[in-house]
Image (tube, rainbow, N blue to C red; front, side):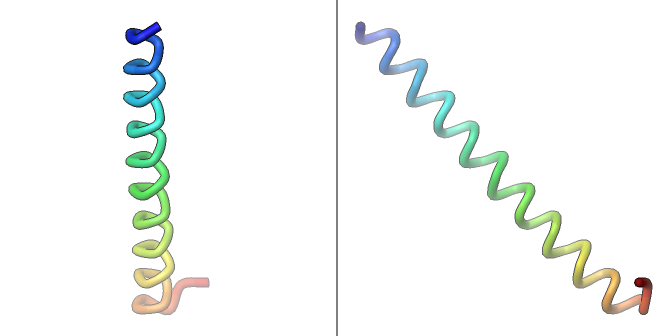
Length: 39
């Protein structure tokens, strides 16, 4: 049982990290498009 909770916590943490990284990348891409005038 304890191992399962640990795995769930790790998976949740990884998911949050990936989501944050993806959001940051999307924001960076939008800024880059704006700076270069690309549409």
